[in-house]
Length: 214
Image (cartoon, rainbow, N blue to C red):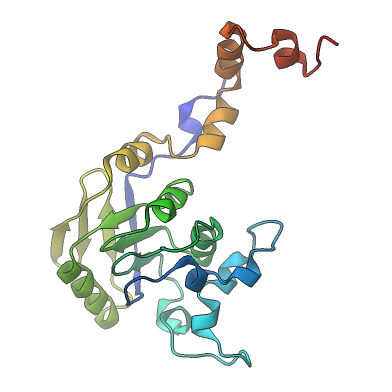
C-alpha cells in the first residue's frame, strides 16, 4: 500500500554553487518565451538563461552557466526579486533540468517560489550582505561545498555557518515530504476515493467506475 513516504523529504541539500548576480531577474530571462512550446519539460535545461548566454548568432557570451567551473553546480545563489514577471512554471523546470537543486537569494517572486516548491527545490532567503558574501566565496571556491539545512534553516559554506529563512509552509512541506501534491494524490488514491464516497454531491457510481448513471 502506498503512503506519504512515496514523496521524498528534502531536509538538506549539499553541493557546489553557481552565482547569478543582479536584481529583478525575471522568468523571461530564465527561460525565454519561445522555448515554452515544448510538449514536455525534458531537455529544457539547455535553454536556461539562453539569451543571456548566447548572442543572435549563438556565440557564447560571458555567463556563469557557460563557465566550465560551474557545470556540476547544483546550488544557485541570487539577489533580490528573483523569478519575477510571468508565472511560467517553465522557469524552475529549466533550472531543475540544468541541475539546480536549491536556490539561495535575497528574495523571490511568490509564484516562482511556489513553482520551485512543487519541484522540491528549496528557496531560502538571506540578507543582501550574506548573498553577496556567498556569491564571492563561490567565485573564489567554485568546487567548494555549500550545505543547506532546510530543517534547521542554516547554510554552511567554507568555515562559516549562517542563519537563513525558509517560509514555514515551504519548510514543513519539504521536511515532511508533502511538497509533491500530484505524487501524494497518486499514492493515496484509496483515501481519496473514500473521501469522495462520503460527499453527497459526488456521483458515487461515476467516481468508482468512471461511468455515469445516464
